[in-house]
Length: 134
Length: 134
DNA sequence: TTCTATGCAAAGCATTTGCAAGTCC
DNA sequence: GGACTTGCAAATGCTTTGCATAGAA
Image 1 (cartoon, each protein chain N blue to C red):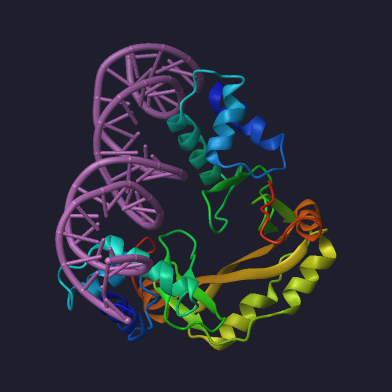
Image 2: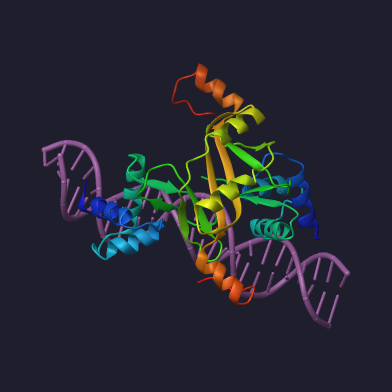
């Protein structure tokens, strides 16, 4: 456990924002100004392989990382692209429904929701239709 | 509707394999040897915008394309990475469960299954454990 | 010491874009 | 003719990798 790895982990655990590798890099650089992107990527990969963090393959953008390794769903805001947790227990029965419908052996599933966060919804209602959430 | 666009669409509709842009390029090049990747990407994007085809953001790989625009789920084989359709009607109630658990306005969801196709399952059972499905 | 990790820079892969020439109505 | 499209090549964005040096066990 090097200093770099330690700080990457601390920063990741200090936020609930599901940052991208680049955002982790920016956060960590405040404390380690000479760290490189390569080190960030290598450590994020290593931490994920060891089950310490989670890598989130959210659609329509770069990989995101989550210090919370519990299995949970996410929702992505169409306006600001922010990713939030959904406090709902994963639906195990989905995999059974799937298994009945195919000849595959189902071993997992990925469920991601898309929607509008309260702030972006407000902007859409009050502002013009094509306005994009910042 | 140019010749290129027509042939891209025909090739996409002729297969159930959910090809990547590169695979579409290879298929189309058999009939139009001078077509470029740029043209393939531009037409796939255009066809998707017009609702003629579907773009699939399957985790852990490049974008895939589907000539079937009906809303349906997919399963990805862990062994050979093949993507297959799941003949199951989308679960609309998932979005309600999600909406009750957050302050987001939910407008959609993406559900993807992961598993082993019959061929890869057979290989894993009979062969060595770390053998990769081809 | 011996193995592993780092910083830097370059490479890799999927995708997008600028542009001059070609095609379609 | 005028708008759109193509092929080509270069650029982009995200991620991985090679390598010599530096740090950890």
